[in-house]
Image (tube, rainbow, N blue to C red; front, side, top):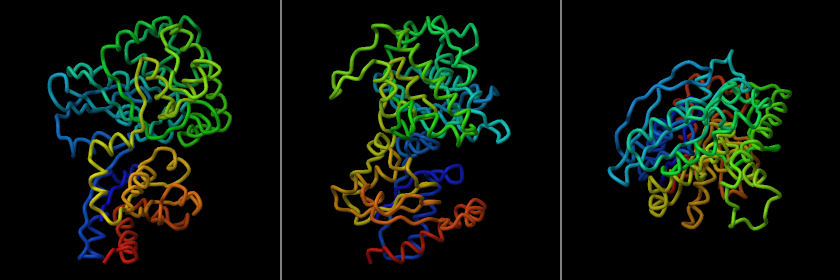
Length: 392
């Protein structure tokens, strides 16, 4: 059987979760052949997961953090010559874990550091740069990242957080077309942890800003601010943006096409911001699954156990668990989820192709104990699951 989880929030990395789950399963079912395959959806742990599989060189850099203080980050460089690829993750530069609880205000946090990280990645000589998006403490539609990439910000509106975007004027984005041209020679691939749009009820502001510290009123203000920025940014690019010839129905405008694109709202809208400079947005879980050979591992398995910190509605929009179930279906391999919390009903689980889901914390009062000992409580739950699902 195969163990293929994502990380469990800030408690356990994907590698740590995999090690814990494999050990617990082997202890409960010693006759099973258990293999581990750590995964990532582009969020925290993206670089670590790929480094463990692909090898390569880790280059240490320092960038501007989400609240303006320097933070350490890393660039993973794999291959040589034309095949040289640099991998980075947004969580290193703009992750929620980098924002102290007392400073969590997505109207002020900035993505400038991710732009600096991408510049460092290109500086390694890589012709291809892949950035994992997820787990951010920001909500500025990537405006700050554009400044980090080199866009002039004479009035300080673009790099000051999502709230400042309400005052953006056309002149603030006068250099956007030139920035896009500067990055035209680099293949920029964005691997998003969710497939949500930039705007709307499930977009960056309404769907995710509250968990980053925004009040309901601030979330509404951010929605309007991001809409203003998106409209002016698309206008600034003028005829540079080509129509989407693959779209089944032509959207009302280019702005609508970009803001409603799957993944545009990932990491507080970073998917949208990087698309402005020519990035191609793809599902992060699928990209990692292909790189680590998930399909081949599933072909030899009779059961797959995946997991993440919190299995909720977001998990059905491009996260690892739903991707694993999708990939397991053609192999007729049942998928079982073990998560810190399970907040999805049986109907949604069945529709996603998931056979069973088990929570480490079955009741809200169990959460503190799980956070205090994430590996121990996860192992206890996996031991119980193994006794039920062991093929032998």
